[in-house]
Length: 67
Image (cartoon, rainbow, N blue to C red):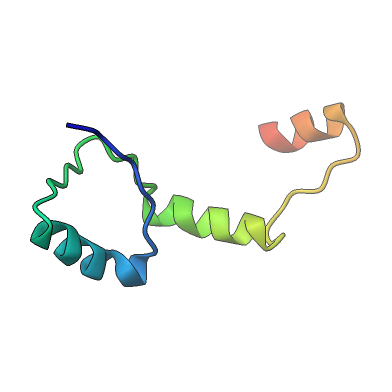
């Protein structure tokens, strides 16, 4: 048996699960590392360049991280 890790868009996950079930594929979610809603939201904002902290230097970054 082989193991594959695949990423499926949320809107297609039900369809993919049904298709895999019809093919006799076992879906094991216990090892899946799925980000929670807050992390997904942050990732989407970051990819759009939103809510980023601007810094001018390493010391400025450290100051902002510690505040």
